[in-house]
Length: 210
Image (tube, rainbow, N blue to C red; front, side):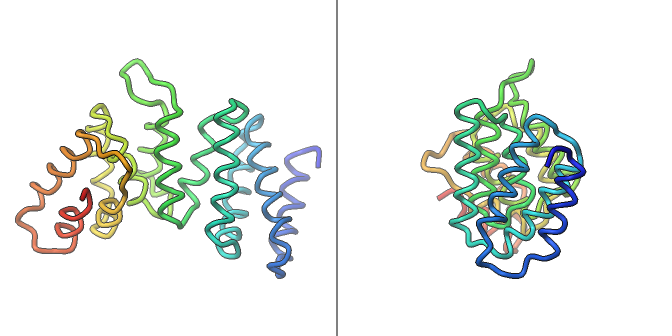
């Protein structure tokens, strides 16, 4: 497959004919091939192809296999063979809270800082949430809060405006080994805003940071 058109056509045939779960290795390898291709040619057709392939991947692959490809992608980032932008694929397309939230934290952690000391990946995260371009926005938002960077505060408030009560409950479940002061302060601020509300959001936020 020498061109994007060849890759798209062949992958479309793969998706259409995919019936046997025993063929999971072929699907795994195709997604990995597309992630690699995306690194040197960020054509929108590659992004759309990854979305289609990953949709199938989520339906037929157990979480541990999806985590394997995520860890492989992270290893490439650590060795500077992939850019941190690869994490966006998992943030947008995953249904597993653990993978999606980990990808969000890694995007922020591996991103360089811009002139205002914000991780450059934070703008991508904000766009994803505001444009509804992910499956579980609560996991992404919760991960951004647990990242514990006070510089993200204004952006987090902008994200929160696009979240449902259910999203906030999910966000409150996202936890890391180390609880940052900024994360605690942010959840407290949300709790204060919701103190007069007797619903599941308040309960979820109250229990989340513990």
